[in-house]
Length: 93
Image (cartoon, rainbow, N blue to C red; front, side, top):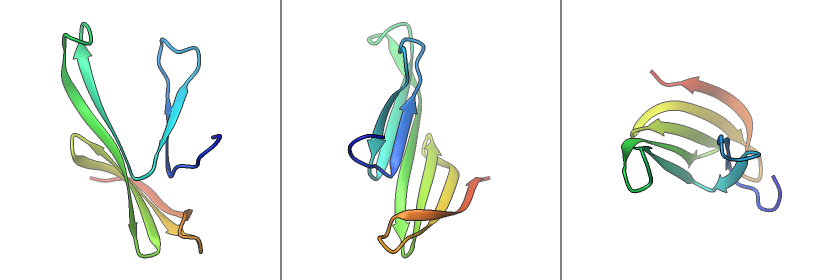
């Protein structure tokens, strides 16, 4: 990634793009998906979000689908407070 560094990095692939698009988020990235026949004639399908939570010396990245926690990754932070060592990356049941 060029320029700024973000803890949450999104790569989006779309059949209309010649290449993938990307963007970063600092703490929360939320997406609402609408389906139907056009921008003005679409209906809510789902929401998904990725959230970063820092607790003590750990950083958690949590993925939500329609507000339900689906997956979580836990990192131990380095001396600068940035996530460094992956402890786990698991689906939440």
